[in-house]
Structures are given as C-alpha cells and as structure tokens.
Length: 270
Image (cartoon, rainbow, N blue to C red):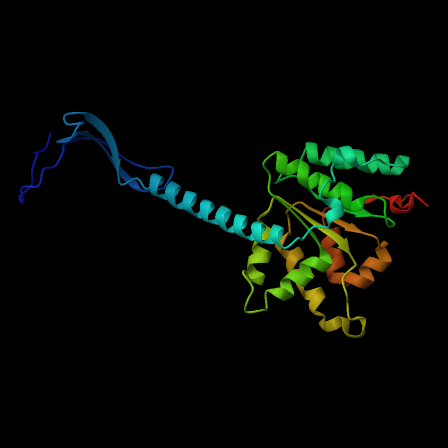
C-alpha cells in the first residue's frame, strides 16, 4: 500500500492497484484500486474504486436531462389544460361510454381497444379514423389516449383548429410559452391525437403559400415515426385537397385507415 500522506501533508487513502481496463460503458481507461478510508466514521474500511470511469457521471447527466424534459412537459401540459384544449363533451368520454350503433362501429371500437391494449411506443403505427359526423371518432380517439395515460404513457389530444389557434397565440408577447414549446411537446409524447383534420381554415386561393399548411407539416414532421391517431369527417379526395398533397402523404405513412360511417348519434333524439 502507498503512503498515507503526500508532500503537502494532505492525508490520502492507502491504495493498491488491482488492475487496469477499458470500461465498456463509457470507453474510458480505468484503474481499479483497493483503498482504505483514512478518516471519518468509515475509517479503516476497505473499498474497491474504479478510478477514471465516467459511467456514473453520464448516468447523472442523462437523468438530469430526462427530468428537465419531464418538468418542461408538465409545465406545457398544465398550461394546455388550463386553457381548455379539449371540448367539454369529451371530458367524460372513454371506451365504456361508447355505444356503437352499427356492426362497423362495433368493429372500429374493437380495433381501437386492441390498439390501446397492445400499444408499443416503438412498434405501434398510426390510425386515421374517417367517417361522417357524429359517429364517435373523437370519442374513441380520446378513449385510447386516456387508456394509455392510465398505463403511465404520455398522450396529448388536440383538435386541429384549437392547435392552430394556440400556435397563433404564442406570437403574442404575453404568451406563457412559445411555438417551439408546443412542437416539442407534440414530438415528445408517446401518443399524439390530432382531431378533426380538415376543419381548419385554409386559404384555397393561395394554397402554395399557406400558413396552416406549413404549421401542419411541422407538426407531422415532429411526429414522423411516432404513434399518432388522426380523425376526419372528410373522404380521401376532400382531405387531400384540404391538407395538400405533401401533408396528406405524411398522414398516410404507416397509417391504418378505419372507416366509421353510421348514424349521427347527436341527432338520435330526432
């Protein structure tokens, strides 16, 4: 064992070199030493130390980055909730409150249930729910979102018109968060539900330079390769015209289309 003190009189732990190696975790050259604690309540205790290994430092940095992202996401989600980004009619929506009125809607409910039950962040694809008004597309989409959040996945449900309105509000100096914050949150969540495609205002007279098209492309680009559910009341031709060819192509990438045609449940009392 080496001396207990150096030339300046500073007490150093006695130590003995055991071996040197390259750490597989961090790639650094490491000296593994047996050391005797020189003072304190653990004085005289022998420990094994890997000097030069940066694995713990890397782990702490990664942990801090993850925690920072979680804190930021919680902040943005809180602002979203406080500004009512979801329609009141959907606040109590879940799978148990959805009552399909046709065999097609029963099959659609079954597929969405299966999607929620087998959801995998890295494996699950996208879903596009299409059909006429009042068949419960938004109801089923948010049911998936709620089911996943119960399993501790992160999910965000936004209608296209409200999303675009919220982005516009970030241009105000009084806004609590930025457009980049919104896009970052959309890109971070495990599942994103983009409701009511085609309901947004589009200036069809100048479709080559349209702000809404540009913003939707940025949203879709942020979700590339990540599970997303879309809903729309438009058919394929109408949706392609409304969204433009580039955005429509992005929506269809790795996407299962589920038809939800049936009677409008909002008119059932008539």
